[in-house]
Image (cartoon, rainbow, N blue to C red; front, side):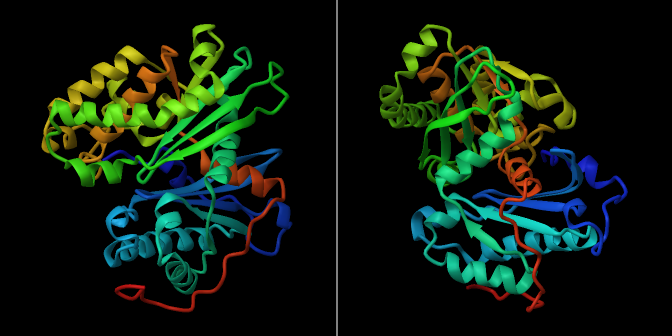
Length: 359
């Protein structure tokens, strides 16, 4: 199974102040509850940045079945409450002052989100909120901004998630001190959990794989025409950054890692020809073959092929030539917001001990 990229920081001793110290120096926490993963970062402010002192990641598949029922399932809710309880325990142990916990596509689509949100607060004290695709784009950009090349005036950034694929078209100023800005962002209903439910998680026939690629490219066409992205790529004025589990997995495979290592993957580059080669190799394997790879594991073996198909569609639609890998995004953006004094809430008390079977 792919390890959390920052798990090594969780093994370092706690050095943050306990409650009662200077509030501005107390640790802050960010939770990103996606359609597939629940991820936590706890960090201590460090000047205008931060130093991670704890982290957690668990595959919860919150979006499982939402595409068919429009509801979060009892089993998925149970998995999430268990994972969020671990997050809350870590936050209390580290003396977190403020936190922000955001939920994305699965919860945007779920008719029972409010009941789920209330249970999360009761069981864990965490204040969970659904964010819009626009806010998700803003946070992702803030977290990935350091990876942008100021010498290229435009950038395509994307995240292939469990329930959707987020695309962001960016303006990049040539001055490193200036902030890049979002020109446009779009959320496409193409995520790895949804694709695995539709096409299965064992062997994916070549025709099914190409059907996902074609469907994705069709979804990209309006975005491309609206901004003339293809023309700017032909002029050599566009860079591309991917911040999803799909791209970090492929980067780990390309580097031949025996165990996933964030320090080697984050900020690295992957040529499009390698994307195509590795994607085809994974597509030819069955579930067990993919699960045996140390950068994939059994929890992701049924998801990675769908992600590869979406990634290939992006690469074919916009032939930039190479992709920069970002093992960062929404959580880092939240932390920077919190350190700047924006948003954030204290961790509330736990009112319930055991989550119910459903909400």
